[in-house]
Length: 389
Image 1 (cartoon, rainbow, N blue to C red):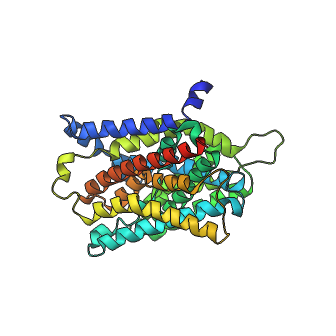
Image 2 (image 1 turned 90 degrees about the vertical axis):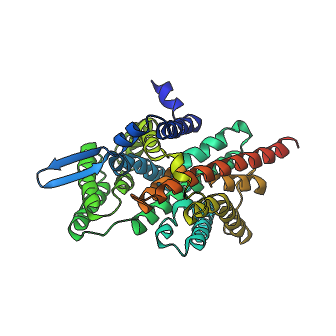
Image 3 (image 1 turned 120 degrees about the vertical axis):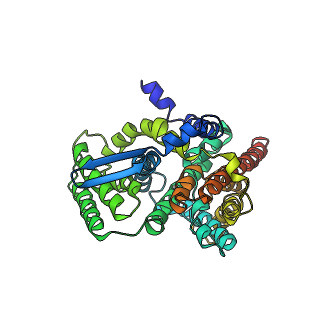
């Protein structure tokens, strides 16, 4: 069993599962099964407990409910890396911080410039700012031992800070009209998580209970409820003062990793990548949403990451990773334009129940494929030159 679990820790396997889910979704949406796919996609799921009522389509439960586990895993990785990992010192974190900032600002600016005259399209400005950590590392791992360790660490750190930035953007800009009473309840739930963290308590049932209250309160308040996972992750202790006790954070990460890889992300991909190609012919790629996303992912990400990295190193605020060349780092900057999972998630928040979501999703897929293809070629050429010396 442990060998099977270790297999799914390999980014190549995780990425392949996501790609299969995307392919199946595209087939389902463009085949005789399209009506069945749409019916399941929009199936209403009703929950009631006394006066509490939550009535949403199945896809909404997946995007706001199951994705709690996705954000839990992101939060656990960010916390572990910042406290004990490759980002635990400012010097180690400086380069990916600058790179992530540049890789978010420029794509957003390019998108805004292209969509400035369309208020509806303008809501999608954050779509091209995110990097899909699973798929980006999957593509990088295809080159195997040719990749310097420092390059892999840089891409991982860049994607982590990218995800952190995306979480901040979602919480600040993509909520609905905020309801005061549920928001106050959510605040008390957050204080509860902070308290059990300070007391070094790690009883899963307590986290589940408070997390459930927090999720319901955030959902009812209009704040993106899936971010509950991130807040829970930050409250889980990395160590507890007990001799011989294992890390609660690592135990949680180990327990949920397989569910995230095999169930959460593939299910999200399957229910959000099902684009009917015929629906795109009337408005793609000539609208500002599609152009903004493709330009943002394919040009904004690579230029923003690379230029910000050059500035950070030139000013002495950061240094290039050991055994990594600027040509290789440029290849990673290209790979940062792979934005499927988080970009699609932002798109579902930016364009709920509108035709623009179709244009956004197909543009994300195209931009990600182009970024991955060119990035692999550049990194392959750069590592070939090094190995020939």
